[in-house]
Image 1 (spheres, rainbow, N blue to C red):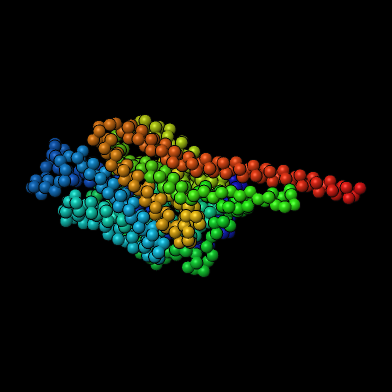
Image 2 (image 1 turned 180 degrees about the vertical axis):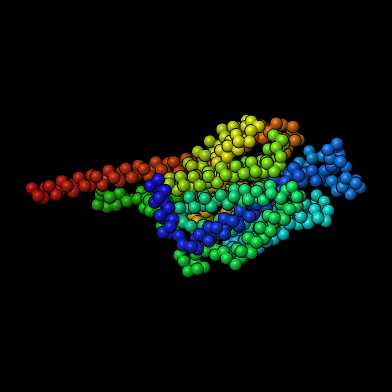
Length: 511
């Protein structure tokens, strides 16, 4: 409790009202992006029914004339529509991944406020066209849907690199894990907002779900254009210095949170002439590549839950779609708590990898436990929240705090304006992995006729691969912590010897 109180006092004294507004504006900007994405994942059952013929029975009479009501179907059955829904998810993620590489560069070279606002407004227009306009004018076309999803992926890619770069500009490393751990809940909060909005209007028609979320996203873009401040220097405030934020690491030459060490001399004080111990600086790009690859595996799992969880609950347990939407919120609740606690612990340890790896190893039994959940909403929600804690938490840390740490390193950026580019590359590589997952999930379940348990085994394999990718950083950070501890012990021993010699000399002079 004392450490939490000290951290809270540090936050209050260090940050201004500008920091609060930047936190909130960037938080809800990306939350609104995710709300529109969540809309599509939450209406998959309804939209697949709209795209297939409506058969008549005793409780659901046929609508006449039949040609008008049956002529717009795209597929012969819902089982045929499911793979196309997966392809739409993959289309979005592939274009999103490509866009992240581009948007990260654009964010560093142009005003991030304008790039973000433009992306939000144009994405809202595309979502409105797909979800509302096509239904109102009865335009049902697979190629047209694919084009819209490509455009939406490219436009939504402007969000994450810009908001992470802006947060990295305003918040330093000493509290970045806690602050960005809490802030990275924006995606989960957006999922919750989207699920709640959809559940309230879905009974009126799926187009109203898209109408509401696209309107909210468009309004957020307008607010950002007039109110967001990308950097402290824009209002005459100093930018945070990562090297000065952490007294311990600055004085020791210890590794930073990414595992990149500075070539800082460590002075041994028990001799007249200082002896320096220098640490070699590894290639920063290896950490960059490793975290990108690990995030590709982890985002595959995280986004598979994001895109398919409501559909899974409906098909596996037969729950009503609105009920499945509401229950799926608990995965995001677990991710919010996991990101905050994981960020705080990594700040205290001054290392990210040990926290991330520990949470991912605990994710393996949590995935198995959730796959065996009975047909009980309460038990399912609890197990879902636990899985979200150990999967969503590390995903939030890698995509926010670790990306910001990487982008602020001189070895990687080479200049002071590359944080958006680094974030775009890390998240873009993750989106490539996530796009593969959206093809494999329906392939495993429908095309190969495997049980949902095999899908979860696949998730466990990808989580284990994430751990394997991070292992080099874990080993290096553990060694760094051990070396630093040994150095501190040697320094204390040397100081004790020096004090003893000084005391002996003083006694000799007195005698």
